[in-house]
Amino acid sequence: MFLKCIVYGIYFLELVQSALIIKTGFRIFVTMFGDVEVLDQIEMAWLSVPILTSIGEVFYVHELLKI
Image (cartoon, rainbow, N blue to C red; front, side, top):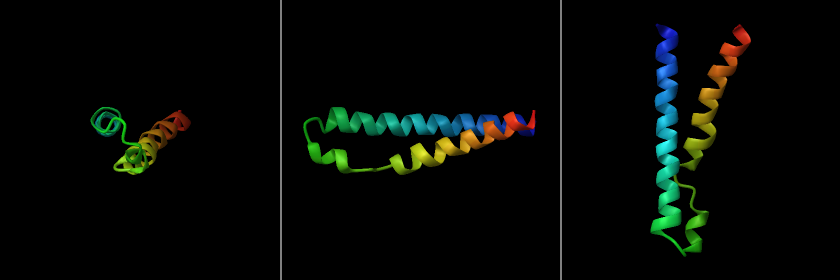
């Protein structure tokens, strides 16, 4: 049961990560189309890419090495 809760938690975090990336991509490439300065803004990419991805990867590597 504990393992299922962790997997569902990671699934939820990955869902949040996907939503943040889609929101940022939509804003950059649709809403602010043609504005070159918007490409320098980081927004939530500092959270979604390195931190949320590493949480999922660490868990799955831990489970793989346990086998």
